[in-house]
Image 1: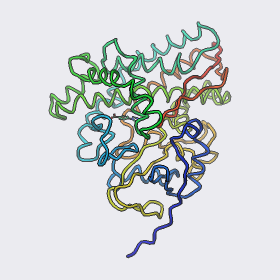
Image 2 (image 1 turned 60 degrees about the vertical axis):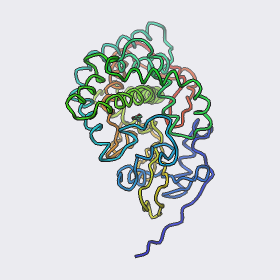
Image 3 (image 1 turned 30 degrees about the vertical axis):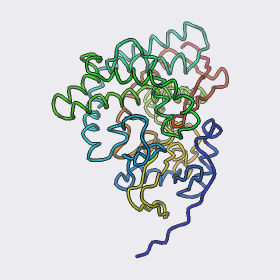
Image 4 (image 1 turned 135 degrees about the vertical axis):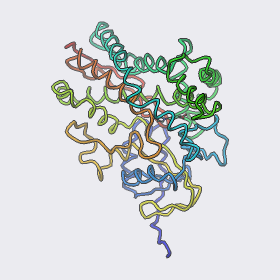
Length: 400
Ligand code: PQP
């Protein structure tokens, strides 16, 4: 049988340009409307921005692999900036042992014990911003402070050098985009940061009880090799801070800009989990990842040849009107399940429970102490090739 391939429209749109990074929503609409698959001429790669095709690409790990990198760089032709991740940048079967080790350590059951301390930490933080006055910066005074307080402790890092965590994550998420631009500008600052991260992954530099030590214990049991352990710790340090900062900022932004929904939350805390899911659907802290075709692949009627990069627009899928009625609305009456902010399928975010627990701790503390929350100025975006985050978000709160 001969496949008649649908023509693939091509566009000059550059998803990594500063203009698109600052406000990606118009570009997302353009890409969705061009067709199920689009060719991005600026990088000679393919792109999917509709929910159906993003979902399809995420769930076909046989046809669309991660082992050639989930950024623009094709690891089969270019040298990655660091040894590839054993989780994110790997396929079965190599992917599976590291994944199952981490999935157990980061399971809701194993993490449950952290909740009381995290709730107490969030209370202290919210009390502190309240004491400092009615206005504060939801990014620098809250969304960044909370994960930096609880996550390094949970992993078992030492006290010194923690200021390297945000810059390392920021660089790693930028490095999924083009090498020129943001990455080139940050590169000179990275060697010392990368050196510090590498040191923290060693067994002797991790506390005996944290998540890091549990990864090393899995190596003792033979579930992973001793060579794999430090790289899996590195995954946590790469993935665990900037992402949750962005997620917490997203949910604060959502409630600060939807006072009616904040009041609904205050009246019904049963909606808390949904509020977080709906906020990450709308904001999609992780905007994009690439896959690489293993062989000729059919997506939405288009045929893509082997060894081609395909850019998946998670944020565009999460606002696709073909899937979500009134897609741009933050709406606690909708069921946001099925959103792809945490991905889907084999690689779906293994850290999502920890992310959710952090965000819920902050939200619960806010609900306990705060009657109203609103923007007190225009928030400023922090541009990153992958993360849709904020530099600053002035908010005004009123004590409950
Ligand atoms: C979005 C793993 C996961 C987490 C790594 C790594 C880096 C980033 C992420 C992306 N990630 N949530 O280095 O293994």
